[in-house]
Length: 396
Ligand SMILES: Cc1ncc(COP(=O)(O)O)c(C=O)c1O
Image (cartoon, rainbow, N blue to C red; front, side, top):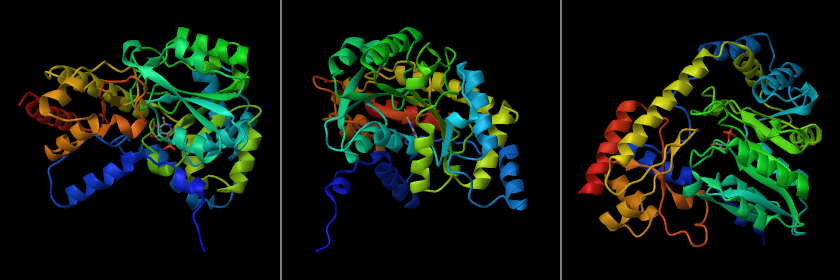
């Protein structure tokens, strides 16, 4: 009898895509919905980047490339990391992949063995693929609660309690999805000390690095002694409006050759014209990308103001990414919603689509608060109309 493996059965997903499918269906049926679900810029890829891909295709640059990526791109990434993180990265320490995502599972595969109890600590709520990939590859997921009182950083004591002799890797993500939280330099320093003392890897998911609004972006890799144990991952999806092009990159001296071998075993290499486009993205003019970041900051200020103007909703101003994570506990009570997921469904019926906290991990033990996520990667008019609907619904 043909069967499906337990591993595949247990594989998680990004529930955001399930909600998106529901929203798209309603939109096709003519519903009027303001959509705050999607974690991708609403901008088009800058023209100079598109032209670089077209040029590459016309020049016949369409074949396989080395699995780690074309040298020009490895060099461009190394230069970018040196400039923005102030670290010493050589082109050969860089590996290129089809998006930022593959590095999550390759890092799990490179740092843990199947079914022997190796542990990975990851932020909760967090990008759902962390937990899914940890479980799928036979490691033990150890969720680390992010707390509102700490502006959605974690309590260092909570981290210390979770570190054991089996801890192989800690995943951090700053600016963060879904809370928009940003880790402060002092917090990164404390994490760095723990990683060094207990000798584990740090997976630093920096895919929102260009979207830090209130203070310059900081990577844990910049802290003295951390470069070699940090898997520094970034991509062009969010910073250059290139989600569908599928290109991400990571730097780590030890792991880059292993990532390249995983690449040989999976996709062979990233799409060649895309790689040339990203050389242009990284080396070419940055004004379009900077313009997008300024626009996201304005939208953040707008949505935070509008949400805090709703009786029953409390929203911190997130330091980065393009998400807000308002506390809707009181709002749920007001409208008779049993949970944030219930609240989300009710909001959808009012023509506002967002995601609920359960889409980003199970509730942390003892957590009685309810949260939803709005992505503000959408036009200002949409934000104004959407938040008006939320206000009318919650305030009755
Ligand atoms: C925290 C985080 N990491 C990684 C990714 C994946 O990025 P990519 O689309 O480049 O694979 C996302 C995408 O939403 C994300 O939010």
